[in-house]
Image: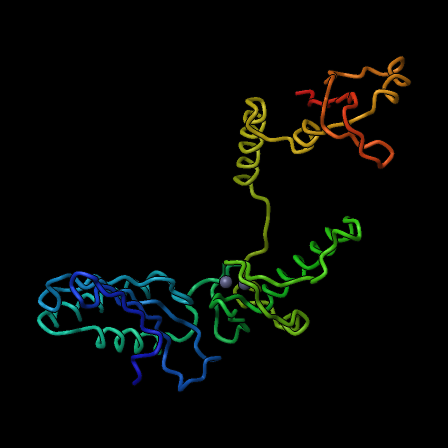
Length: 286
Ligand SMILES: [Zn+2]
Ligand SMILES: [Zn+2]
């Protein structure tokens, strides 16, 4: 087994020996990367007394593993460290974790879109960032985000439109992912989702709804809710040159004015300096 791949050691300047070892471990799948559904990063801190004391072990960035699998792994690691006090244990730990990952090389976590688990026969997708979704759920999520992206693009003037087009991102970590949405769409809905009880608005839910409505009104009355439209209008500046203002003064309230403004003023597309500029501020009514 090759242990030298992707093992990061930080050396202590004072001790001249490794004090932190970090490596990401995958299940053994004979180099078939496509079939690795789980992984975890092992981080081992070596105290000065090591190997005469147990190292400090952390498992980071677990992918496809649920809490009970991780806890079980921690327990096995603790036992292994305890029985190996007095001799180096790092390679044993890597082997132990790899064996465990190989045994549970199927995602035991939930789909982050529908929150159901993965059942036998469900079609699921592993993203490049090692996050898991039912293909059906990922297809739905990506179709909606793609449609939303398109709607937002349609509202923009030509010069502001994205030239790159829609880029799918992972719903969990927002890493860019490569997916064929049309192919994902052919997947069947997850089994648990299909057999789930039909959603109904129960009395409890109605009570909760009413409570949330009251909470919302209370928050709003205390100014805790931000009215986006009012906030946008607050900062809207309307600038007019003095000539234009003079002609419109009889009919309109010019609002507060700033005289002797030395900043350049744009008039009919031409920049003019030292011109009086009336600034009207639309403040919110709140
Ligand atoms: Zn799902
Ligand atoms: Zn991700």
